[in-house]
Length: 102
Picture (cartoon, rainbow, N blue to C red):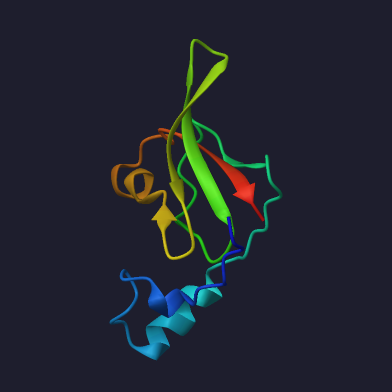
């Protein structure tokens, strides 16, 4: 799989039509996280803590079955985001998120 190029936050459809001043405000409240392959960004059942925007690399999201097996639900790549459901409904994370590419 070829390496992914970083994606600007403005290229996310969620933010595409926002004025620059709003983008600047969002970035002031944001932080960049770097995950190594195999590292978990969040775990199923964690309290909601934000929206994850994938700027580069790739992540997979999965659920744990029978307390040991990981069932992959899907992948997220640059330009994708995850975590919006937890922000909207306030419920714990429904899946875990694992880095598969840096």
